[in-house]
Image 1: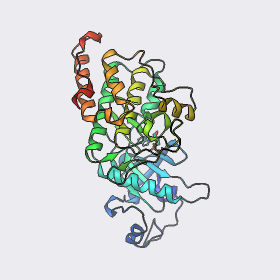
Image 2: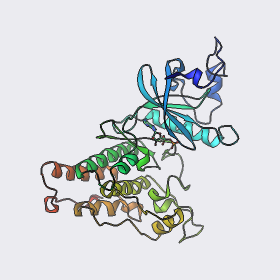
Image 3: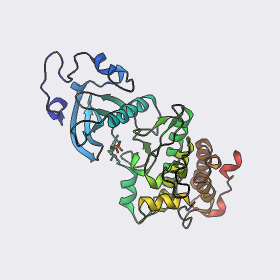
Length: 331
Ligand code: ADP
């Protein structure tokens, strides 16, 4: 572990050891999204350890904050060696939204810093991403009980977010993190999340394989038609994650982004082969073309909890054990 100021190669001064801003209010006033001073971490108490992940937008390190293991996401400058206004805004939104949420299946916010580097500190999830976990056990799938328990955790996190008016817009296995024992999942990466009341949304967000059909701005079928979307885009993404948990395959594997867009727009969906019969109605309602036909996460959680109860009370997962309501029938 190294001290943050050594890591960032700072010239400390007694009055202002970390930032170039002498007054933090000065600094807060310069931001697009208002971030409360209470959310800032005490950089003296942060030390930085090994690199966990390197991406185009951020570097994520393991570290310690007040002796507690944490993950530290540091936003990368772009080619001009500056953090672009878009990146800065994305980061500020992530800090703002993550600091507002508190749920057992959402990664816990610890604090943030804007200067001398944009850093987001969260609880450390030692189990890594759900994506890496799935890759590590291929060609096998997690057992049905574990898949359903992950799916229930994700659904409960989404249910909570939607209840407080937040759309995640980037739900996929690489944004889901596991506890060290790999039994519990937590939602992370709020960089694309938005408050639903903010505005009517039309811009593309997220990765094509998990993106709802109404989100594609390049719609190969209806060129130039801009469609508005709402929180039901997360339900579509959830269907892809659930399908991956049950098959341990990648949706639209081997297709390029444009082919995925075309497939999604022409109502093509991943195969139901190998999907337990009782879960088929859940999948087909969650990836329905019309967002209004997709269930709310509250219904999804009930549906999965019901199946999970049946799986837990029986040694066998024989299909005739399940008698489930179609999740769309409640609407
Ligand atoms: P980006 O917005 O740059 O994609 P993410 O928030 O998705 O950044 O984080 C990138 C990667 O860093 C994740 O896929 C994961 O491997 C790792 N990571 C992020 N947060 C944590 C955490 N709290 N605990 C452990 N690893 C994390």
